[in-house]
Image 1 (cartoon, rainbow, N blue to C red):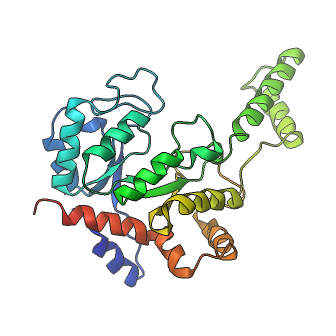
Image 2: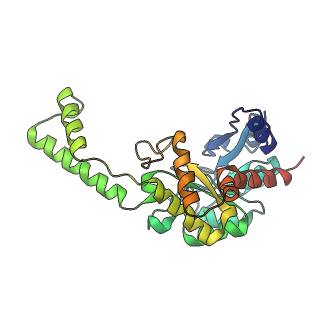
Image 3: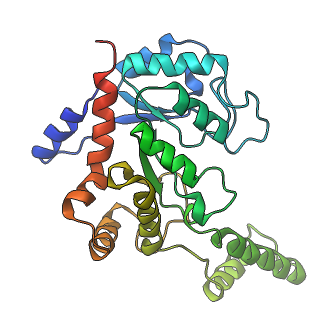
Length: 281
C-alpha cells in the first residue's frame, strides 16, 4: 500500500502511529527500473540512492572507489523513474559529486534524511557543506539532522579512539584476553574510570541553528538515525522519549512552536506532497 502525507495526518488525528517506509540504499533496484514501482506499491515513500559503497546508481561518500564520479547513466534513469512514481529522493550517504549532479538534474525537492553540518566536522563527506545546504534551499529540500555524536562534533571520534588504544595496550601488557570473563570485567572497570565522550542535545540545536542561518526554517528536520549510529547518541537524546529535551532547547533559543512543528514534520510533509503532486497519475 502506498502512503501519503494525508494518511499520516489522519492517523495522528486518530491518535494512531503512522510509519511510512523508506529504503536505505537503492541497490535492491538492481538494474530494473520496474522495481521502483514495485517498491512504491509496497509502501516505499523514499529511497536513499546508496549507502556505504558505490552501487549501480551512484557513488557513496564512504567509498573511495569513485566508480561513476557521481551518478551512473542508470542513476539518471532512476531519478526520472522516482519522480514519475512519486518516491522522494534521499541524498544522504551519497558522494559530493552525486549530490551536485542530482540537484542540477532534478526539478523536485529532495531530502537528506540523516545528515548534519560539515562545518562542525571538517572533511567528513557524509555531512553537508555550507554550499550544499544553500543548494538544498534553492532546491526546496530538507536537511534532517543526524544525532550521531560523530556527525555532530569532530572531537568525539579521536577522543574515543584514543581510549580504545589505551584499553587494548593495558590489556596486552597485563596478558588479558578480550572476549573472556576477565577481559569483560577489565573493560567494564576501564570504561567506568574513562567514560566515552558524547555530544549533547545543545550540539544538535547548534546544527539546526546553522542550517537555519543559511537556508531558513523551511529546510530543517530531525533525522535522528536512532537505528544506525549505535552507542554514539548524544546526552539528552538517547531515544525518542528524549525529544522534549531538544524541543525545550529550541524554544529557549527563540524558535516558535510553529517553526518547531516544521522541524518535527511540516517540512518533510511539504516535500513529500510536492513530490507526489509531480508524479504521473
